[in-house]
Image (cartoon, rainbow, N blue to C red; front, side):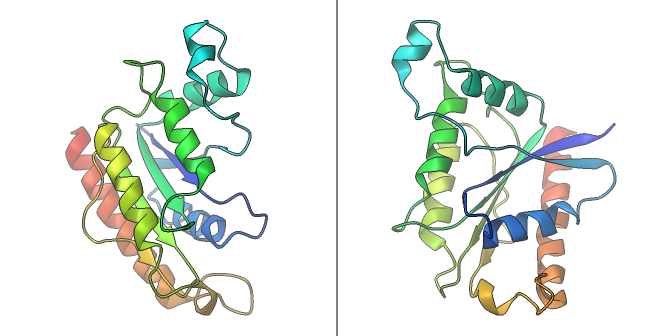
Length: 184
């Protein structure tokens, strides 16, 4: 049976390094896994009044249904001001509501942070993990996935260089093992 992994990219930039890493990693999953990119860029800011009134936006409803259909989740995020981008935090909030109906519950997770800087998105990685603990998303702890100096890891062809692809493969392999152990 194919296992669907929802991929959430925390950057909206057209030429995002995070999208490049996410696409590279998606291609590294074994054939019994189906990576699915879930768009978070069109979600209106979360407002509980809309859920309380029974009028969630169409984008929220579509997003929640898409996340319900996946078996695991992978987040690839940049760091903005030592935390996650607002678009990613908003997606977590939209998916966690209405209270008691979280679409995130018990889905095995993977957190990858990507940055041109040397700190490798450490702050975003850890803030995201804190939120995922509350949302009951067990996350792969080792190996840690901090991708720093990303501009030096892209070849002239615009693709991630082989040495880094090997590292990304080790992350995907560890996540697949983690996922299989949690869902057995």
